[in-house]
Structures are given as C-alpha cells and as structure tokens.
Length: 111
Length: 115
Image (cartoon, rainbow over all chains, first blue to last red; front, side):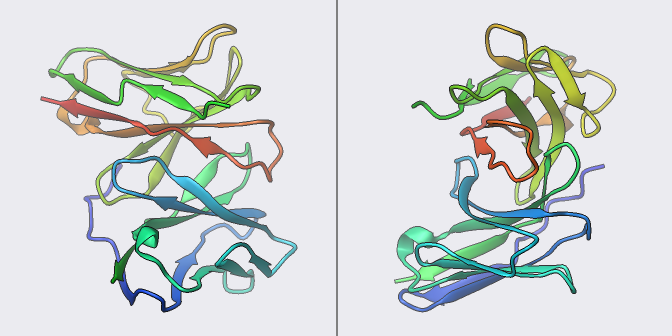
C-alpha cells in the first residue's frame, strides 16, 4: 500500500550556484529515464531524458548523467535561478511504456 | 496545440459518493496513463490505456476503481464509494505511441478531497 508521506530530501542552493540532484533507480532492465520538475499545484513537467545507451546528455542549463553499473541518475542544473525551485523526480520506464517515479527531491533556491 | 487537459481541477466528495475524473490527451495521442500522488510522494502508476483498451491496470486497486478510454471523448477514471484514503492528486499523461523511449506529457491534475 501507499507509504505514509515523508518530508522530501531538500537541497538549498544559492542563486547562481550549480545544483546536483541524485536518484537511484530500481530496475536494471530500464532503458529510458526522464527527469521531471513539479511546481506546487502543477503537473510534472519534462526537463530532460536519456536512453540507456548513453551516459551523459546535455540540455539548456541541465545535464543528466547515467551510471548503469550502480543504477544511479543525476541531474545537474547550472546557474540555478529562483524559477528552478520545485520538486524534481526521476522516472524510469520498463515494460508497457509506464513510468516508475522516484520519491522526489525538493530544490529551494535562495536569492 | 492544447496540452493534456484534466477536469475538474478540484473535486470534493463525501464518503460513499462517486468521483469521476476526466482526461483529454494531447491531439494525436492515443496512449493515456493515470497516476496518483499523495502529499510529498512520487507519482504511483495506476493504469495504462489505449483507445477502447486497457493495456496495464496492475497499479489500480481491484475494488471501486475503474478506467476507460472510449473511441470518442476523454479518458475517465472512476472511483466508486470513495473513502478518505482516496484523497490525493490524480494525474493523467498521454503519449504519441507505445515506444519505450516516448515522452509522456502530463496534465495539471485533479485534486480529490474526500470529506
């Protein structure tokens, strides 16, 4: 069943600094991974994706790193801005295209 | 292009009533997914549907919950005889095809409160 809600891990970062958010995924057969950003009261918003045949992918101000050996995913945000304050989820996909989400990390940007 | 549209945004139901949540996928998308989110939790998969077919309902409770995606009209998530534990945000996502590397776009969610 559903677990009792827990406080999310929180990363506080100074505006302009870089942020790194980490995620451990569960299924070694997963071959596609997505980072989503969720602001309060809104739905998840796609940030960046990566396939399992890659170990790094860059977007605008964001970089995703994939380490399949230890089943670890990270999201790096360069020059963090106040608008980056949100909860960030990693998601993996396997079978039937459904996404399995991690618990999320809260990012708080300090002006 | 309109994104994934969900309605209502907020829904209040008394215990024992029925809740109907609607999701209109993005134009051209024929794959719909429903997720549930409790406060400070990640999204939990419930069901995956294509037009007129349920593909995977392994995340949906066997009792009181049902989902459909008819040939015409939105996808509906139906919860009968709601209980307090059903209070959550319900998100719908749609994708263009079934490929394993297809991005899914999410709606803004329906926040269900059972009183």
